Amino acid sequence: MWTLIALLLGLVHVSFALVYLYLTWFHTYWDKRGLVTAKPITLLGSYPGLFGGSTTFIGDLGKIYNKYKGKHRAVGVFLTRQPQILVLDPALAHEVLVKNFSDFRDTVTSSYVTHSKDYDKYVARNPFFSAGDEWKKRRTDGGAGLTSNKLKQAYVIWEQTGKTLLDYIGRSIEERADTVIETRDLCYRYTAQAMGDFIWGIDAGSLSCGINETSQFQKLTTAWAYNAFQNMRNFNKTAIAPIMRRMFRMRFFTQESNDIYLKLTQDAAKLRQSGSGTSRNDYLSHLLQLQQKGATDDDMVGHALTLLMDGFETSGAVLYHFLYTLGEYQEQQEKLRAEILNALETDKIITYEQLNALPYLDQCVNESMRLTSAIGFFIKICTKPTTIDLGDGKILNVEPGITVAIPTYHLHHDEAFYSDPMTFKPERFDNDAASEFTKRGCLLPFGDGPRICMGMRMGLLNVKMAVVQILSKYKVEQTTKLPLSSDSGLGIFLEGDVNLKYTKL
Ligand code: HEM
Image (cartoon, rainbow, N blue to C red; front, side, top):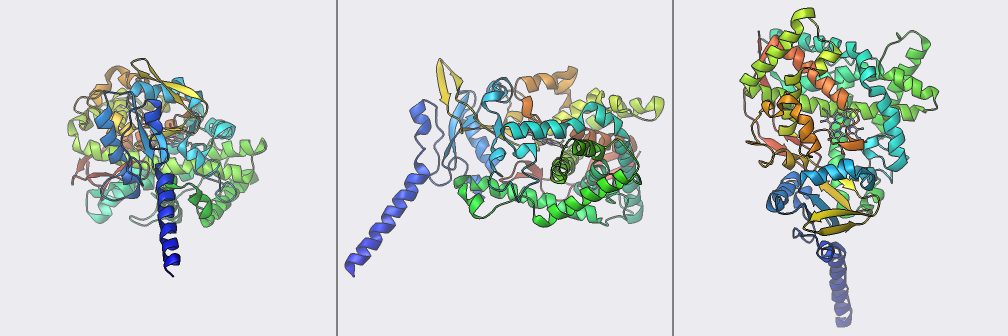
């Protein structure tokens, strides 16, 4: 009996020792290679906030960034047990993203769906989740439908959606006899409407419906995007034991939503091909061209959902943060309105070229995205043996598989690059300075280099059109101050209802 107990106790000890060894195996990795190390916590590595509790992932990144920045170009950290390099010098961020891109070609999300390509097939087709040559092909095929020329041809869709947005705001104020509108909902209605029209040629009904009614498309897309972002948090947590992804058959999109979007795409394609759907310049036309070159129905849905994810969610989030910020900064809002009204004065419309050439609008969008940073960090993967110059004559050898974190939110809020960083000051980007900040690696709302956001032009079109329409007719004011929050997903967001007051000019 005693022998058995002793044996069991011995086994328990050995198991604990093995788990401990597993979790801490790499903790001396950076010391051995001469990189200053931020001391990790045994189980959780450098970012305990990844698993909830009193801190957040972005908060943890910030603590390390603020402790070591200015003294080192990079610091060794641990994504749970895996060694990771945290970039502290924006010039190094630029090297990783642009100059030495071929050494850091993939992103951490490229590894998330390698186990589930068969059943999570639409996520696996998104360039954000792809690696190597597959990434290149998907990006080339999908991005070809989003060139400046293509968006210019489809511009009428945004002009129309912008007008429908104004109509919805007008009806909302009148029918409810209330000038305060919850603007997160408003922005997602707008992006759902624009994306339904551009991707599938359908009226999503999210703005054309009754006030506070929710169309089928909006319900479906809201639930789909919510589920996907929730899953992004879960995937980020599985860094502690990536095998869990395979074991639990983890996925981003449900089978049910896959089926619905497949049917939507097939029906829209049939209608267009039958000739009863009008021929038009939109993304569906692009998808049909890809089909002629051999793209399958699944490829088409993959491209469509790549657009929907950020064209609906990320663009909507950037837009409501921007309107919220403008609602606080009235002087800047007035200046921006003057620029917009001036552009509208001659022809009463703003062309695609004009929209992109309004300097103060561009500065305001950049400054708003700097302040709120929809995607607060990037994690890149080293894809071939390379080196990083640590300064003071020290060179770090980096092995393939090592990840590199770029803390964009913290670069965007560092006083060393931005005076008074928590204040909205679009004037800091006067004289096209934003592109200089990007080259220096400290303004990265869309990333940079060959993996820069594939939908940047469309995201900006979404946001700029809505702001131009709204400011040309309404003064926007904040009614409540909201806290900025973050979790173990990708970004930073306002917590609570974004109630803004819209006063007709
Ligand atoms: C204003 C809204 C948007 C913002 C702020 C934004 C931001 C970003 C950022 C920061 C990245 C990561 C870059 C990196 O990992 O280095 C990214 C990647 C990406 N974005 Fe966007 N995005 C927006 C809208 C869109 C839209 C409308 C699309 C639709 C096509 C899109 C598609 C993508 C794709 C496919 C990638 C992955 C690119 C690659 O890895 O090659 N985004 N975006």
